Length: 333
Ligand SMILES: NC(=O)c1ccc[n+]([C@@H]2O[C@H](COP(=O)([O-])OP(=O)(O)OC[C@H]3O[C@@H](n4cnc5c(N)ncnc54)[C@H](O)[C@@H]3O)[C@@H](O)[C@H]2O)c1
Ligand SMILES: O=P(O)(O)OC[C@H](O)CO
Image (cartoon, rainbow, N blue to C red; front, side, top):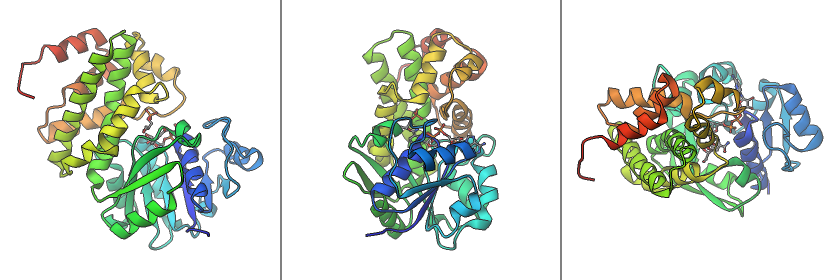
């Protein structure tokens, strides 16, 4: 049985793995790749050697670098570009969007300057109603999903029917989506865990052990929830897949780009040196700035985010940052 047609805009690791999920769930998928050579490789070799090497992609997937052709008629439009380029990319794609298509955000970041969540950027740029935007977020390291290792995720949308439609379009024997109507919580969980994963990577490179990392994860979740509640999220979301689930996966996994980036910083490399060693998007590096600013705007304390920002962007030594976290005034949990 054929499902709705879908387009995935962005042929990076998660965009490509997510296209495979859609295809495996019975949906015909077009992938838009920024570079023609990536689109050609997907069509000719059934793999994406640059972003997901060694994983065979289903025949239901085709790729193009022509956005108009890719988007034409798609009922599900999946956005999988880096958070900070979304606004620019989407502005070019608006004319091609089908009326009543569902826009699905895979991105885990907060826009610099505007401090907007990705769904807010989507609504602002396209003018679509909020209930046409869904967010997919959870413990979903792309390589593991592409290898069909069992995992679950959250489809968050204020329109339950749309959430259910997306849930059906991505349900496979190895990928289990749950619906949720808390878009704010799902997006904040996804964006802030990247910052906490940077902290865990820094701690890993400092040879600190599991107590330290569990402390960062748990107190990281506390500051994520504080910000989320201030912005109107349901605190329970942070105990779920898009909160704790994603935080634990990202902070624990050597596959995480954010944690790996943190390890570079923890070894004493500068931001520029760490960036030179990283080809893919580590969203937390930029979003730690916007999340810190969002927290300040809402008068929410986010001490780990503050220290990660200082290590990333102000050259603070990881040892001084860790000492500053431990020297904070004592308080009840
Ligand atoms: N990789 C994962 O495991 C994973 C899982 C869940 C969510 N995410 C999130 O999904 C989003 C996309 O991540 P990814 O892993 O696919 O990233 P990636 O780094 O693997 O690839 C990013 C893609 O965006 C393209 N790109 C880069 N700059 C661009 C620009 N200026 N305009 C248009 N396209 C541009 C790249 O060519 C590439 O195709 C991120 O927000 C990430 O946090 C990633
Ligand atoms: O590789 P990262 O650090 O971008 O994390 C990937 C996913 O967000 C994990 O769910």
